Length: 228
Image 1: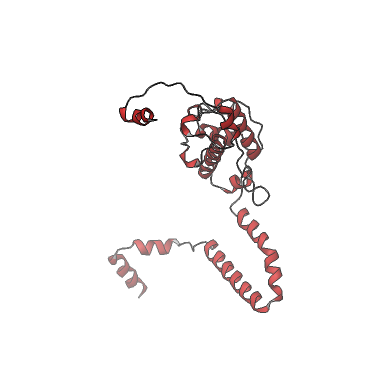
Image 2 (image 1 turned 90 degrees about the vertical axis):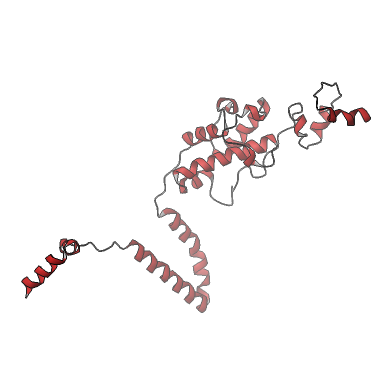
């Protein structure tokens, strides 16, 4: 043990032979130390939120449809990074750089299939088992998914109309309370007035108004003299 303690102080790297019970490490169910991750492959764990929001909110296609095109790339990249982190046992998906090569992260045939399974479950796409090798980085994989996902474009009013439809039962349920009903009606009218004000087109200036704005002082005085 004294020699072992002294070894780190030399500053030199040495090869050593040691016994490694890889079966015991795999059976523990815990992620191996970072130093041993390349030597011991544990069974990949599925993320607890494999289908995030499934049954409790909009699905991936609906979330993408409601997002701006630029935001869709970010959403899909975050999705891929989260699944990569889950498969490889990384605690923080933000540590997975979008431009980092997937093979450098430690993917093998087993973890590649697991990544494919998780992404297929999330997106509903039929994906090849070699997707982690065909697409070099998380960013490239996100682009691959975006190009294959059919996203129905939403009009500007659809998200708001859907939200109003969701609120209707709550509004009807409050109708029995006169005070609550009055407050709700007042608030809805305020929102309606705000919508009318925003949507009302600005009055167009006629040619006379534009001419007066551009006229010089001499021209204005001359116009007044003509009217007298």
